[in-house]
Length: 418
Image (cartoon, rainbow, N blue to C red; front, side, top):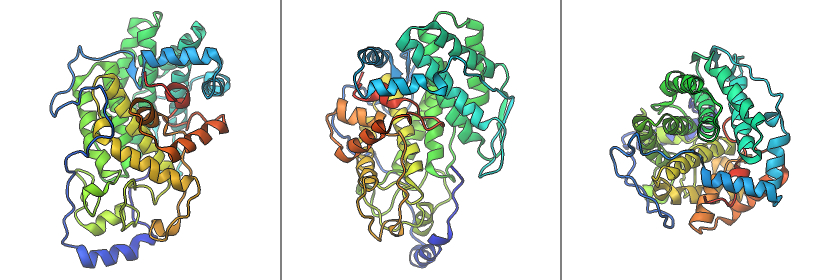
């Protein structure tokens, strides 16, 4: 989550590489790798992608067809959907007594310094999305009313995000707000038009300026989370310009985060960053000097942040898929390789000495359901180790959300191509 800084462990590597490669330029991303499998979706060309009248609703992360499947499966009681639904329904986010805590200025400093409203905003946005899903699955209008009540409470109050983590905070919360609002606006008839408009104004004026753009000097999970929020908000607002901006950032950032050997001996540098040498690039990749298929920019930091980036990347591609744009086709091989690479170590494979100094932090959350659904259930591309990791995550129970921006994706996307 923090801005990139090279740690002490990387300093010797950086110095040696600097001596050897100080004049070596770091190239920009090449053309996208060949897609994994095929899919019946339009691959959008460069330039303008979406007209204002061309959006499909509901279509932020989950489509109507997927929501209908969730409703049917929750009623049937089959696994893993039965347990996932109960976890969602019986947890605090699904409670009808949930009380939002809006604040006008969300102050989120980096590190462990205390902020104001950061946890509350993220949790309230997830609660609004949870209640929206419960409304669609159960038909209980009390959940619909609770969802819009939470959203109305924030749209009446919040005005800005401040301090060092403002953009990341706005991305996490904004992504969940857009998912909740998209379901409620297009499936519920008692959210007053004036309140819908107020919420739309909140997304446009408080969130979109923070997330639309890039943060090339930060770890890649920032840009990917920001693009996730930008795309969701763009669909809700029917804003073609914001949609195009999210696609552009996706196309620039994903190849600079997940490595493939076809990129060349070094990963692509983040577009717009000040990194110009192999030494600088190694430092940005937390001291890693050997690059193999599936390695991620934050692998040597921890798998938790790689999970955030896998989830955000999949969210963007999934939302675009529902809008008729196949971003999966451009990045499928990278995502498959990243899933396979990280899953093997999460399952316990020995860590070689050349990888992150032989030490990995392998805790990844419930972050892979969306991309696995596309690869396995739409394209028929098996990723067995990653599928096993996802299965273990489901069987643990009670952890359907990371409390940041990922929520209930085993319920919404496990074996649910839509």
